[in-house]
Length: 232
Image (tube, rainbow, N blue to C red; front, side, top):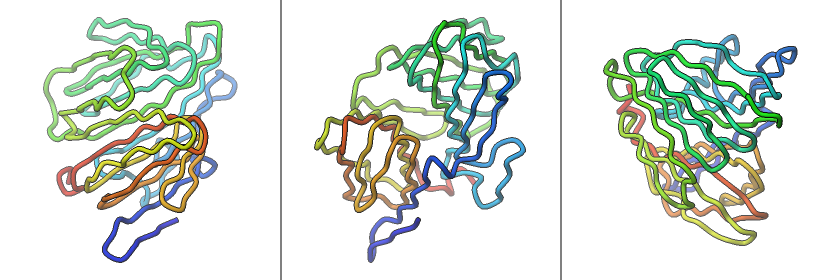
């Protein structure tokens, strides 16, 4: 749904139930894709600004993605519940938990494994962004227990991630930016006249003076991005 006030921002709401379903049920993997991904091709839904993927992944205990390559992609992962085991060809091996933010800059090329090595189900949101330039050396980091409202700069993509945790009735400003992507991780919020629940997202162009209001306890991820032309 698109809404535009006179001279104001344009908001396109995408519901969680509209996401492309993927994964492999027999392997214990369930995936929901917000953008065209793999065999799910929609030429009108390839990207929003720098963002080219926003996947909700659910892995049963023992399930995972075997070693596979990435190149020229900024990959940011937010664990919702459970524990994610990451191992890559650059020698990093970590366990990522709820509240931790993982960033893998694949740059000129890297291979990695993602797995649920724990005894409980794993759920995480993984977001892929296009870099401003290609090539270079891969980079990796985990920010443990990122605080509410602390911005995380993804310099290679020219983007900024904001984590917002809201109490019922609490308000927070949406960044004023050329492009803002809002993903509701848990709970429910109001954006303008729209109610967004867990799994829903809003794509906002020319954001200015907007607020998110918690309708329950909620957690949201907000990407603040430059004009789309910066990324071609």
